[in-house]
Image 1 (cartoon, rainbow over the protein chains, first blue to last red):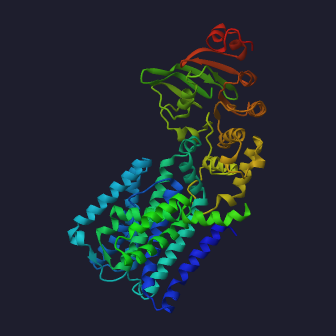
Image 2 (cartoon, chains in turn green, cyan):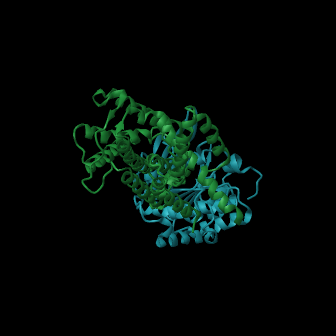
Image 3 (cartoon, rainbow over the protein chains, first blue to last red):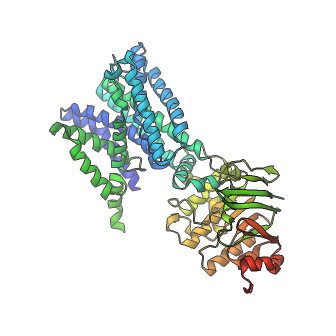
Length: 314
Length: 248
């Protein structure tokens, strides 16, 4: 078996066992941490799809997280609790937003792409701040979780956990197929050598835009899940530092590895939840850790694991 | 005529890189462009491929005016180019490089599920093109790890895989040893008649072995055009470019 498959199997088995272990240890707190990890793993996975395979460093990805969460929050505010309606709204709105943001920013590359996505992210942040009807700067409470009738009670943490787990697994499988598909090959080719890709007849804009939209929609779903966990949504969810956190998760785990960013989300959020109990300046410890990973692991932590596994056969 | 270039001009500020170049290439021929360094050969090629916009003049390809079309549309219509500096997809294997060109030519790129690596038809088609340039045994090597000459050959295979009507080759033998260079010349001679080729080349042996017509560019201007024999006999060309005393 490929080391990639082994790593993926280990990650998902471990994640699947979290609720049982937490329950056995009587530490239900870890289920909540786990849900957060799964949600941010989806966001990081979606970012890695365009960053690792399309070379698009989006510094505004939290915008889609916010759009997904606000879609749930605003519908709930107007009394629409139907889960299907809320999730479809989250996907549709984040798709449209990604289409618009992408249509502008995908034309640029490098630093300009970073700045453009950052600018759009901050525009949406301030838009949320200005929506006083929906709590403005303070955010708003959401009265209940998405209602899926009798068969999916998201209010139950274990059900919510496995719902997030299924979304993550589904998106990971889809992304893994995508990068090896005809579309994925073209996207990676554009990233490697755009001039050459154009010379064989690739109109790069529509491929990059499509990838950006897929990524945005996936991240929108994670936002809808986040709203269900927190039962609260505020502009802070799309602040640029949040986009930075998602970016750090991808870099920690390994850019262009898909499963790496999932590890990145696990490590980042575990560090956050343990270290922040020791000191509120927990980033002082995170910073050096990030530097060490970037310096010593060529492609993040997953790349480091893969290299260890291959080393003996060399 | 497959390609008709009429009074093409490209200026970079005060410098006229392409100065009223006119040429015509009939289907099935190899047309070589020669000239000293800085003569504007690559600029002209980039204008034909659509990477550079022309300031004046027209380009007709296969009966249609393509002067205003972007590069990827020209490529899709059958105008493929190779690059003077190795330009391949370096993290892909040789096979993946060629398979990509084939799938883009087929136009089925918005497929998100089926795996390219398991597409038998695509893989065998790609192997066929690699075999044409004697690379089939190197099919699964990452392009970055191929030898220089192999990458030049891969470059040609990628261009062939997009099944072009006209192949624009920018110094396909540059940096190659004598043996590798001879292999490329043999390959191009084999492709002649089934494919039309516009060739920039420094290796005069290759040019005179392959070309049906030659255009000589100096400072962006055409100083001579004609059959290889005419160019050989042309005293202006000897003086301007080939060197008075050079025996060839």
